[in-house]
Amino acid sequence: MEPIHILLVEDNEGDILLTRHALEETNILTELTVVKDGKEAMDFLDGTLSYSDAAKPGIIILDINLPKRNGHQVLKFIKEHEDLKHIPVIMLTTSSSPTDIKQASENAVNWFITKPLEPQVFIEVMASINKPANRSK
Image 1 (tube, rainbow, N blue to C red):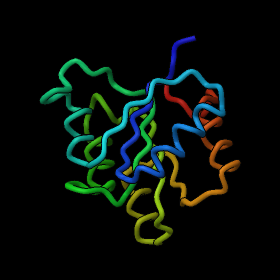
Image 2: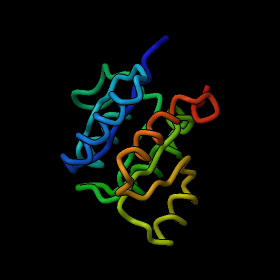
Image 3: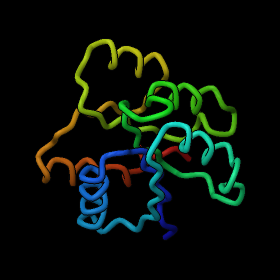
């Protein structure tokens, strides 16, 4: 089975470590790439700068509160880009603001998850990304 390439767009080191741990606990074969701001995420996805040879991810986990470009801007960029719009995006954020939820929905987010989650719940969420209904073909 091919590993799932996940792009994690997160600037908080604690959340990066928690995500790595949760993915390890699921025993799902993954390849994780981490970028720490919205502009870097857009450069990675667009294949610019040092990312010209980077493979497109199978799933994107995206925070809202990011430096340089926020998660909403990155999500909109993804969903308006012909070569990227099919990639499932999980918005994982501390925000539970109805405005953020509405904006993410309008930009076709696949999942909106408010953190912090209990560690076991977070592991279950990460495990569910491998289910066929949650992955694009």
